Amino acid sequence: MLLPDDSTSPRMKPLTDARALFEIWAPVASPWSAWAKPALFTYLPEANSAPVERIPWTSAAALPLGSGRHAIVVDLPSVEGIACGLALAERGFRPVPLYNLTQGIGKEVVAVDPLIAALHEGAESLQALAIPDDAPPAFLLDSNRHVGVAAPSMFDNRWMVFPQDFPSARALTSAGIERVLVIRREGAPRVDLLSVLRLWKREGLASARFDPASGETIDLAMDTSLLAVFSAHLSMIFHGLRENAAGGFGGRVPVPQATSGGFA
Amino acid sequence: MSEPEVFALIASLVVGFIGWGWLATRGAMVDRRLWSTTDGRMRPGGGFGCLATIFAWFSIGAVLFYVLLNFAASDVKPDAKYVVLYLLMGYAFAAVNTIALRLYGWKVPDMFERRNRAAHTLFYTATLASVCAYAGANIGDGPGFYVVIYCAALAHLGLYTLVVVHAALNRTVYRILVDRDRGVAFRAGCMFVAIGAILGRAVAGNWTGFDAATGDFFRLGWPTVLFVSADTIVARVALSREIDGNLWVDRFTGVVYLLAAVGYIFMLGAPV
Image 1 (cartoon, rainbow over the protein chains, first blue to last red):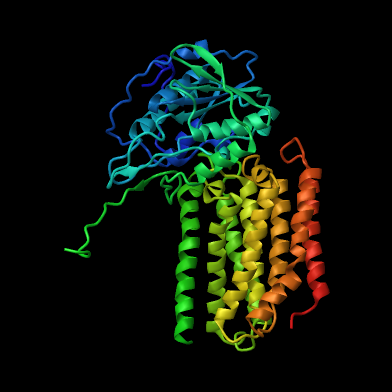
Image 2 (image 1 turned 180 degrees about the vertical axis):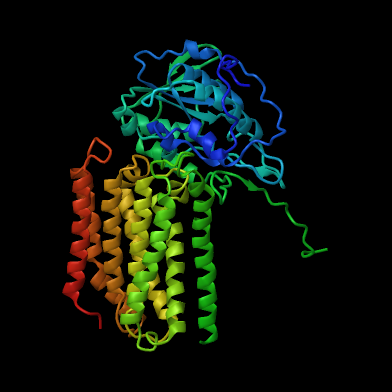
């Protein structure tokens, strides 16, 4: 089970339905649920799937939240992002899962099972928390979303985020958000997230990166010129990832066929 | 039907089936499953993707049936198989239109996964714009289906060019897809319908040759540039700091665009 430790939380009814699971992670009453991604919730973990490894996430207490008018983007690897989201939920944030990848035939480039199982298991602790409807959002991403090499016959489910996947700066500021904190361990945010932060910055919403390992918070400076926005836009159009016909990212990498043509 | 006409029928069927089937599948896979909660409450924007798709589908049929049965070539109107051919071609053009909408930044996930109501409005109105452009190409007599394709392609080319210019000049795309501003989506959508209708009228009429058709297209279709110019000004003047802040102003402006297009088309009179 994921942290925060939910051993004291009351036992909930077992979740049997993707819709019920989505409802817990994206309740209708929260305005930020409109941005929650349904892709992973169309899958249910297998009944015999192994329990999720317990991951401690204790850095939430060290977050410099100042006035409390912060939105958070959790950009941590795999289930650690969900563990962080649950820890933030205990501090009054509404975790908003933005995982936009799918499963398919073949070995997956980005592991999906742990995420599905973690969302499933974390739902009980999340349901037990009384998060206010107007709680600020904590958007959950997998920092491994673009990591890995897609070889033939593998299921390439690497994914990325677009500005449309987040509320606009206008929507965030009208909800009282003054600053965005990106929780990320290694280096600067990826180009896809950076383009979102850049658009927010252009509309007057500043962002900073919090490193949970060192506890440091660094203001993110970025090029907000039109050229930078345009070049990021172009790189996102030609991202080369495989979008799934049923929503989300994911597609099988074709196996090159040997041909009988050509010269002997 | 001749062999080329049978080929056009099959091609239209395939393109239309793939395009609209893809949208329906996407809606069934994502939207239908998660549009409401377990206790029957609707999610904001939930189900609207499927509704917009269904409305678009019926609207295409209604508009094209009316035009084909009343204004199409004299040998098409009484012949059911030709009506079906041109109807299916219309569905194929509208299916391609959903791909072309990427030029404006709109993508299918905006409808279903993101449940963006402004994107639903944009999709529906852009489909109507495409249908108007295609319907115009069916008005009047002509030597065969290839002139309908030529005129429809010409009208769509004009429509997409103006769509790209509009996207480049304004932040409307951002307001629709990221801000999810329904008022802006309605205003821009009405402008596209107005442009589609005018371009449809510009390619309507009896066929007299490629040069004449192209000449008529530019001679009668130029006012569409005024719509893009006007909306560029409106987008700046009516800019609101709030999302949906100018909902009624945007709606009113959208209706004005439609009325202006209808007025212009009536002023031109029946195509010859």
